[in-house]
Amino acid sequence: MRIKNNLKKNNKQLFEYIIIGNSAAGLAAAESIRELDGAGKLMVLTEEGCLNYSKPIITYFLAGIVGLDRIYFKDEKFYRDNNIDIELDTKVKFIDTDKMFLFSDDGSKYKFRKLLIASGGKPIIPEIKSVSTGTLKSGKNKKDRSFNFINGKNYNKVGGIFTLTTLEDAIRIKNYIEKNGIKKISILGGGLIGLKAAEAFLEIGIDVNIIELADRILSATFDRQASSIIEKRIKSRGSNIYRNNTIEEIYIKNGKINGYKLKDNRKMECSMLIIAIGVSPDTSFIGSGRLEIKRGIVVDDYMRTSAENIYAAGDVVEGLDILLGKNRNIAIWPLAVRQGAVAGINMAGGNKKYSGGFFMNSVEILEIPSISMGLTNIEDKEEKGIEVLKDFNPDKNTYKKVIIRNNRIIGVILVGNIERAGIYAGLIRNEIDISGVKENISREDFGIIHLPADYKKHLVVGEGIEV
Amino acid sequence: MLERRGDLRMKKIYIQEEYCIGCRLCEIYCQVKHSKSKKIIKAFKEEIIDILPRVLVEEIGYNSFAIQCRHCTDAPCVEACISGAMQKNKNTGVVTFDEDKCVGCWSCIMVCPYGVIRRDLSSKKIASKCDLCVDEDIPVCVKNCPNEALKFMDKDTDEKNRIRNKK
Image 1 (cartoon, rainbow over the protein chains, first blue to last red):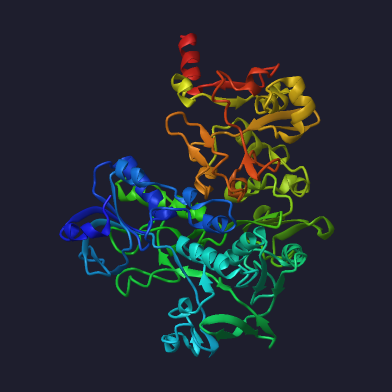
Image 2: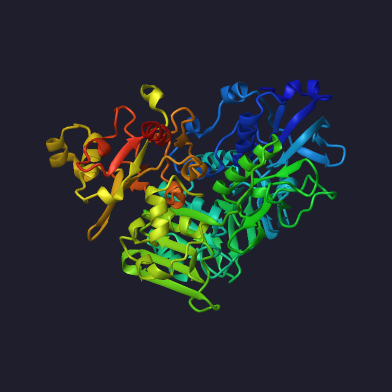
């Protein structure tokens, strides 16, 4: 393993493989390259200052469920044993897709034969008006921390404002909570990251205020009923959710956030704010050129980009959504791992097709687990061929919604009872015709035995299925 | 622990549903195996309430079968696991589960097409699934099935033997 100090030595080196990004997709690619090619020089470049850790686990770190000692996926030995070089703290500045080299921000040049871009996502930070008062303790830097607007460039200069996408973010948040005795945290954005953050904070007894622009939390995957159960639970703890709302103005006192004004003009006190309105593919360093980029980098079924010998995988790409029948950015862990593995095999001369995926998410709020997958925001008879089965028990905190299109399940929401959720994922993935067994689908004891005979046989006595 | 079965590495549990009589002895023996006392009476009296069987019997009328982790080749639970708790052992083929690493995110439950991973809420919230009884010669569910509705075998070798015997 190399560290940055040795960089100069690499300057004229040619790497068989370079991977940008050291998370789910990047690491899966490195592992599958090594299964086919143990020798080709392989370099991983990461912006982060630490070895591989699991990104989604940072909220469990905040909740105190895992400590720093257990957060790392792979240690130095892994990189050494697999003959993988890695440069930490290395941001890619520029890629020449024709001449096949790239520059990092300190001017080092890296040549490659095959490149994988697995740079993931970057938090989206909206521009918000701000009013600063008071002075800083030091008094000197007041100008630096007195802003008319909070945006992506300056938010981290204001005390108490954070994003949450990296381990470094999580450590900073944890330290800030401890140092300032924070009891309540506002979260801007009730989506995936916002809710996972809420899950963590509530777990350690910190109340949350969630501010969500849509009419419900997890609006991308939950419908109103599902949201209402989780919302009720969050509120029962003295926390709150502000729907159809956003932050219009942030108040900064002595260099720290001390409140904000909502869109509905309510003024709120606040000593800590997490901005979690979403992430977008991190393609900033690629610039214009031969790579086709829409919202994410466009890839084909082999995770190849539009430029020869350049592959992309994970949260940075637009891969195939089998339910929509077109490419889109689905930034979730399992797909990042799979895409990375596929890209790695193909980079090392293998031939593996990515069979596409669909959105899924699991989140548990104050003992209420929930899983959503596929296309979930569709109501009964909304389109021709659509049927929706619902079992909503708000008093028991359970909800089950199954969306069927042309006799095939395309979406599921489970709240409260998530037992055997993956059977639905299998039905969606394998496009199983359930017309004969529809009445079984919403049973409480739903299992394999209720599935269509052929598929059931396949699961029970088959060798395995594509999953 | 896994080395013990080095020579039998490709063995898996196969389900013969036509022989299953739904007696649920597999569930009981699985619970006993994963109890503290390992003794059927003691486990049944004192512990079983907290122990999830890792094999599930599904039953409608006379149709029944027992199913447990299939130890898939490209295991979706391993792919989806965010904590590194689910791993595929490349030598034995067993999908191993490390209780200490699990954070209870339920991603494995979300993706397992067999629905054989469950939430164990008895102590700390973690996933629960078949470990193939790697410290036994034969998994206890197979060993204690009175009607051979579960079989522990290497299908490839078995097929070859069958063909050889025919000749």
